[in-house]
Image (cartoon, rainbow, N blue to C red; front, side):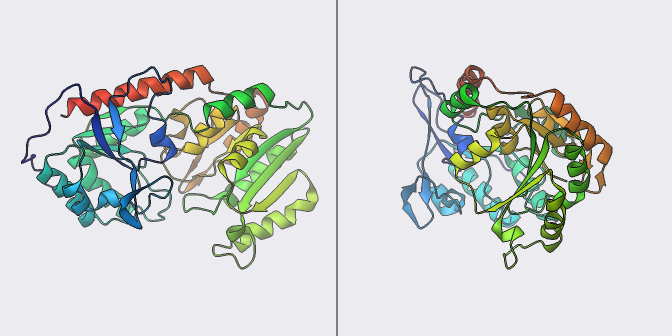
Length: 371
């Protein structure tokens, strides 16, 4: 793709508040890019997500499909910097090229944070690669979450990405409460595997036999498998008969606790994660994980695959799991190591609070440098 220069001068730098069109704005990741301390001056104001049903109105929670990715909205919008995070799954490369063109026409810089170098919802990577081939070269600044992702961006597109870590996911107050009240059990070791609605990047049935065997070999070991009704109940939209049958067959052997339910609320999710000693990420491809950050926030050890850059986000135990490769012995070793290293990488509330201030300042500096 040929990158053209801006035809309209960008707004002059100055002490005024920088208005950022963030796609999205209401997602927890973006909300936690602002400082917590009310005494910290915020030079950045992120515009609220327009309601997809009525772009004239703002939306607190419903932000998809993102109205801000409409070139007409960009041309009419009152903002200084456009920051794309995610949410463009349904946009064709041609649509994204039109977004870039609208930003060039109006003289507004594009910042792109690369969360996903491989879309976890797409079995075939081709579309996402083509989307990245538009966005990464066109961005005036590129951000990502880990050094490994930054290195890949450099190899694939020759761009230097600024590495800014993922902020906390769990509310700080909840983190404090869990740290103070979390019940420790010497008799039970509970490992969690949550298959959610079985996104394309997951391969739970590939790892389950080794995972269950390793947990059963540990005194007091329990493997808790959670899944949504659409995957584990017959008639569900994404029903996986092989997975459901395997879990039903293994249940009588003990050491496994299968729970089928609807989507959890945030509070339910925090309670669930805080009851686990370790959580296994069953991904065969992907890049980064908000789930891993939530585990660290709550003191639950993360057992992460070697694909992507999950293990670079923070302390974690790794096992070999790639798109076409799984090493059972490495998973068994990671599970036994989790028993010996409780709360590996547990995030400190004060450090997470300070990280928020640092992230807010880093983004403000980045935005200011482009104006």
